Length: 261
Image (cartoon, rainbow, N blue to C red; front, side, top):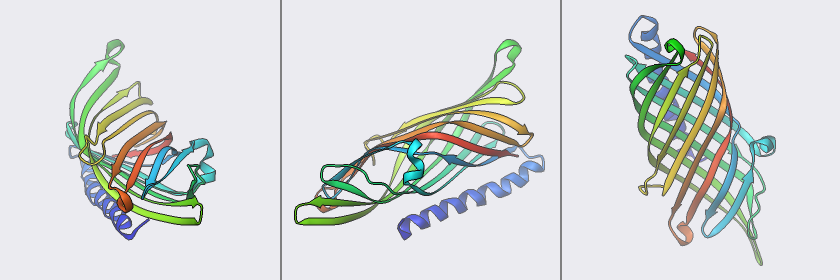
């Protein structure tokens, strides 16, 4: 991971903490704020094509093979809602991957650092009482924000008379829009769904995401979530020595521990 990407990770992490900490204190004092902080594990599979300077590699690593290619990872979600109407969410994902990916006389030289962050504002359209006697309150949020990518990868070209290693670091930002649904089944169980699209040719040609979670509340302020998330992007830029391609899908199960105040 480059120093520039590392600074971006630290800056965003600091921003989430700075915003969330005083809001959490205010919420406990009876103000109209609800704050959720959730460290989580995203067992990320990786499928797609990456390319640097005309050299490309196809990668197909499922989350079942995680122990073979994941070196280190860290994930955090923060969510702030004001008056049950307006809010802000942020997510930080960092993974250091290592694998041997097959390509046309190309291999992934065991090193790829990926930083992915979503930052979005949302508006709660409303909450409807569904189910028998309105026992399942369900909320709908509309989201708009940005998805921040930073990818550092090293490709090794296995060509006649040329066994070279190529490294490239790229960062870009995609606008995203989406929606989120939260359904409270009963006092203990709830369901959360989220999805969106973005890119629109502004940076990436296209990016998308989808997530489904089932939660169990074991404490007034604590919920454990289990589900599945997928994020995809098609980003290509430059030519010749400036060529860079990332056309891939990250997907796998999620296990999260959420604390809400």
